[in-house]
Image (cartoon, rainbow, N blue to C red; front, side):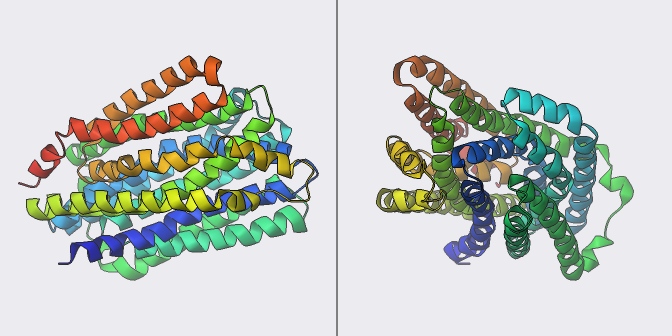
Length: 440
């Protein structure tokens, strides 16, 4: 087997899938920047609303990550009945989580708006988009299972469809119906539920023979269910740290002395997000292949897979450094109406901090791939503990540096946080030796 070809077979569709996520954010930010007379206020309101939903979605992403590693290991071992059981476990958990979010939307919404200093515009956005959350969690379950089954094509088809629908509906609702960012929220609801319908259809068409190969007692059997929940617990705690970091980033930006820094940091973070979802494509390939080779007890293939995935991560990081060096100003110009009175000021202010966006891909080359390896190996305890340490460093660096270098301290803390995530995982696995031993 050509391992590079296998990595690319899984990574490239996942890259397309992942890129559609920040593209949806980019489109939403661009619409907000071109709607109304005050680009700064509209972009800021949307940024806070998106951060709140990132908090919700990322804390539910354990459904995808917990499913993919266990499914991949069962697939590698040829235990296809267990693959089917994992699908039903994932979708059951997704339904429960989605229902809880809807039931608790009032306290969740008001607490989040208070914590993030959200205004009335953000409040309307939140209570509209909340109805998309159950669909988003269900898609986590579908996509995690498809990834574990070494199928990167179906998540790509679903993601592209969801974002095409989101784009069309966002333009129609925001401008055609003059709903602004509330129209973007309605577009999310329509797009996410359309994605669920499509994923379910693809599942039935491709895996119809597997769907009947399950035993309800085995789905709810305590031993595999306990393993699934233990992995999910670790991922939830790890993801909570990620969400805390990103949410704090937006909140700290909103509390800066210059109100325009919220919009500036939001725009710059979009550039980093574009890179992160690109590199995550190879992380997903690492998830699928690591779990598969551990299940198949193929230590040599596992070792080569981890080494090559890390190499691909380095290549992607180097490409994005060059990309941002040359074209950051043109990219930022896509998000802001050039005719707006504050457009030139936002771009000029962003130039004071763009060096961090150029450096972050270098710091982030390892952690994304290491996360994929940990998920595929179901070594979620190591992933969780490394995240605890990196998050503590993030807050410590910011609070020490903020009085001295202001907004630069926020970016310095974020850059080092990314680098430490990968470094800690590498060291905690004894330079990946303990992962390889799982396939022995």
